[in-house]
Length: 154
View (tube, rainbow, N blue to C red):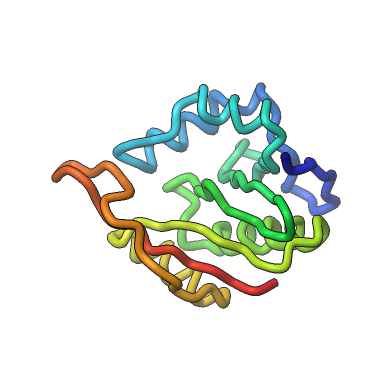
């Protein structure tokens, strides 16, 4: 189980259960196969490191990761479609990696859809490198889609 940690950056805070309606709304507007409220709730209950990025308008993004045995696995990182292309995804990713380092993780891993070119570009620009492929990992309208496995030394 990964410990949750307070973080001093304004607009970036730990996710709480009361955030889930806004998060699920963003998730549904972002993905054809979104995480459910129960998946987020399970992440909170199991002590995953879960964070939100908010502005005056409310929550505009979130990230969930596990940090175990010197490794961080980013499970979900999402920005509201209305706030993409403004550096918010990069900010979320950078903050998650800071937290992973505080927890003494020396590497970070994640999976991303092969069709998610915007996310792939972000991760590669932040120093992640492709280390493999998970065949038929994600559901898609045509059946299944591969995931690119990315890793970064911290």
